[in-house]
Image 1 (cartoon, rainbow, N blue to C red):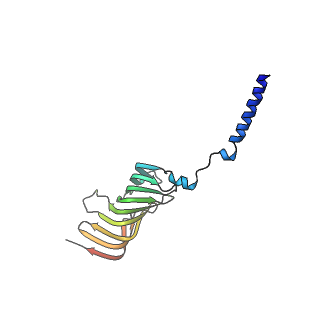
Image 2 (cartoon, rainbow, N blue to C red):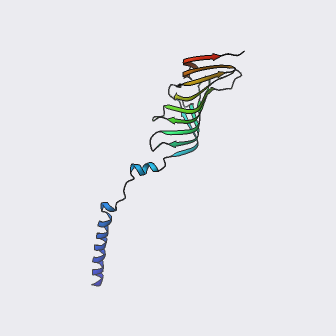
Image 3 (cartoon, rainbow, N blue to C red):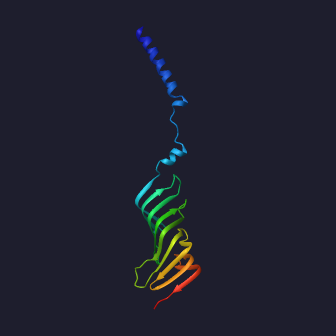
Length: 185
């Protein structure tokens, strides 16, 4: 008899404790937006990102000292960035900068701070080097643009301008305004 009373009390205690613990007051609360913003997003160190064309040949390679996710959004910031445009049969280009932001979808890379865009120096002839504060690179069309001041050095020659459109596939550059050049023998 004592065993039956103990069993009934145990079952009743189990039912009551299950009911209390499953009540909304005891359920874990989801992380609010404010608390979620305090948590770190993902980050990568010494990262290399490579994009391939339809034939499987590398077309762009992005190297960064570290990459941080920005506030749990699809946007990322790349620090100490080097972007290599690998042309299939043309001149390769390298872009350096302090910080780059990849827009959602990964088709536009915005580079800021000490930006330098230069042709690959594998040959003996001088290669153009573009210096500016900001540069946007369209990965799909291989076009780099800026509305900032630019300085282009080509050997001993120097051109300055305000604004630039560089088509890396066609190896052309168009200066927008306030173009000024200095050519030394």
